[in-house]
Image 1 (cartoon, each protein chain N blue to C red):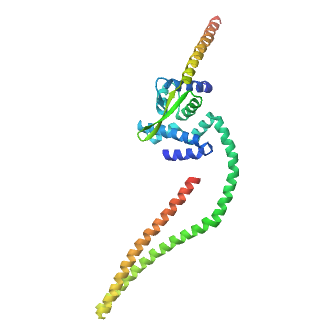
Image 2: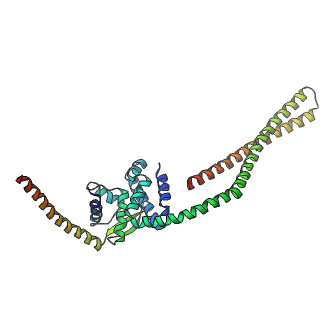
Image 3: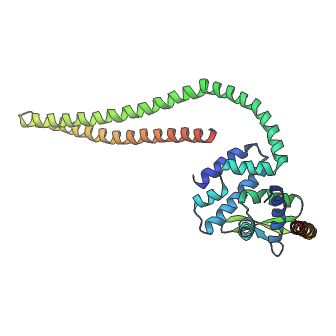
Length: 189
Length: 109
């Protein structure tokens, strides 16, 4: 576990604390961490001395009974809020997330299809160019064969350009979606 | 060491560590570590209690691009140390009596 992960877990545990108190606790650990890093300790050594976020949280709660009491009151209020949140999430999922997700996946599919189609265009261009050369060699009209050859080359070029562009676009959109999903999962787990 | 006894000792230890000059969290732990077991998680509530009770004042100073909180003892804090020393002297008198009586009682057997 890195210090950032440790701090993130600690922040999650301190959600029930008064905001100023939680900030003060985090600032305290940040300061100690910074001083120990300057003194040459590694992240793992520092975190070993800190203990797990759960252990720190329990110690702080045990030493501060008035805060523990206010946390209990806040936890009771939180249960009602949690029920409302669950209902809200269900509605959000049904009316927003699923349609939105479908649109986003559709867009990714379109880009992917365009990438494949551009690749096929390139292949078609190679076939056309090759065929026109074969026609020229076998005695067809020079002008028309060259025109067809040119068209084939153009298809190859356009197909190559578009396939690269659509591939990068598909990859970019997929990476953005992946990062958004992992961010929300990490934040709200 | 008894937990409650240690809790009381730690507060006075922290005050003693900052009596001569103000100090900060990591330095306090480093100074006290040879004498008494103290962790970062133990120190925070102690500092908080001392600040709330008016035994210390705090100020934040920038150090290498980050903030460091310094703790300075107040007269209230110095009084706590004096009261503790008085308590320890009384405790020492009583404990000497107990040990002496034990030894005398052991001799009689």
